[in-house]
Length: 559
Image (cartoon, rainbow, N blue to C red; front, top):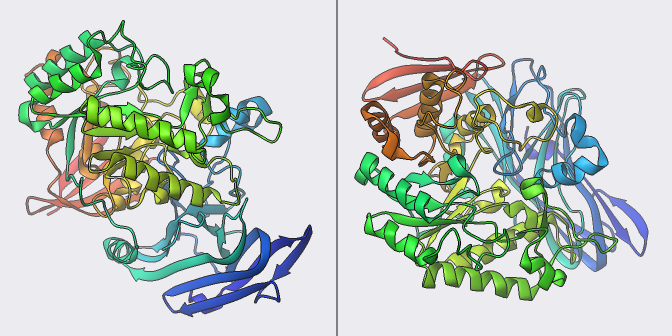
C-alpha cells in the first residue's frame, strides 16, 4: 500500500457546527506531504476549532493466512498477531455492565478504539505479515495524540486514525507522521527505531536487570523483617548474578501517601532498607503509582481538589486495584509539586536508584484542557523523566508508545498469575487482566522493543514451591515461564525467598538471570495456543516449541 492510495477525511466543530473536509477549507488548511514510505499531514486552523475525527483510509485485500499485529495500548494489553479467523477481544461479559465498566474500561483503549467482527487494531505501530515478509506502518509523532491502525478484514479496508478527542486548538497541529517499510522482522524494527525521533535514555542507561521484587509472594503484606530476610536469601542464592532488589507496594501507609511510611512494618524507615540493599552491592528499587490514591488515603481527604473529576464533579475511578482508586490530575501545578517532592525524598533522602512507576495510564484517562490523551501522556512521561533524572525509570501500566524515549525499562505484559491456568475473571473482564499465559504471549510478541527503545520487563518468574499449587503450577511450567522471560526480556525478577532454594533451583536461577546470548530468528503462532520460536544459540540452530494451554514445551537442535 503506497501512501498515495490513502484518502483523508477530517471532521471538526466550529461554533457548534460540524464540518467535514478532505483537502481543507477557509478555516482549516490541510498540508499533506507524502512519498512511498512516509506521509505527514498537518492542519492549520485560523480560528479555534475542536477536532472530532481524522482518518486516512485505503482499500486493502487480505489473504486468509495474512497476519495483522495488534500492538496493545498499554503495558498489560494483549498484543499478538491476528488472522481473519481470530477475534480481537474488547471488554467481556460482566465488564460491560455500567458498575463494572467504570473499573474495567479505564485500563485500556475501550473508550476511543473500535472493536468488531474481523476488525483488528493496533496503537502506535503495526505490521502485516505473510510468511517472513512484513509490511510495517509506524507513527513517528505520538506527542500530539495516539495513532491507531485498523485492519478491517470484513470490508477489505486499512485505516490510520488519530485519537483527537478533547483537542481544541488554533494554529498548527500535526495530525499524522507515519512511515511505511517492507522487509524481515528485525529489518523493519531496526529501521523504525532508527527513524523514531526519541531514543533510549542515555544518562541512566542499563543493559540488564536481574533480581527481586516483593509483590508476587506477599502483595501488600510486607515488612522490614521479610524484606531483609529475602535480601539475604537473594544474596545467598544469586550473589553477583543479581544486581537489583526492589520493594513493591506495602511500605506506604496507603497508596497515594508515599511519604507516610507504615512505621509498624518498617520501623527503621526506607533509607535503612536502601542502605541494606547497597551493602549487598545491589541497586535499590522502589515501587510507586504516582497518580493513584486509595479512596481512604490521607491525600484524598486533605486535597480533594487535586483529583480528576467527571462532568458531574465526582472523582473518577482509575481501575480495579485496591478495590478502586482515585486519580491525581497531573495538569494541576500543586500535584506536580507534590510528585516532585516525593521523588526528591525517594532519591535524595532515602537513596533509591530505581523507581517502578505503575498505573501511569491513569494520567491520560480523561482528555482535558484542549489536549488529547496522547498529548497528556507524552507530557506526563516527560515530566516523570525530569523528576527521575539520571536514576532508573521502570514504567508499568503505561501506554507503550508514550514510554518511548523516557523509560529505561518497561513492562510489556500483564501481571503474571500465581496459577498457570487462567482464573475465571480472564473471560469476563478486560484485556489487561492478570494472566500467566497472556504475559508469556506478550513477552514473545513484543520482543522487538527490547534494547531498541528500552529493556523489556516480562514480569516475574517463579521457582518457589510455597504459595503455589505444585500439581497445577508444575516445575516444568515454571521452567517454561523462566525460559520465555530470559529469551525475550532483560528485566528478570523473582519474588521468592531464594534462601529456601535447593541447589537445583539456585542453578536454574543463575541460568535465568544471565543475559540471553542467542539470536531469535522468528516467533509465530502455529496454532491457537502453540508458539514456535526459531533461534540460534552457541552456533547451533534450535527450535523452541511451547503450548500456552498446557505449559508443555520442547527444545531441539536443527540439523
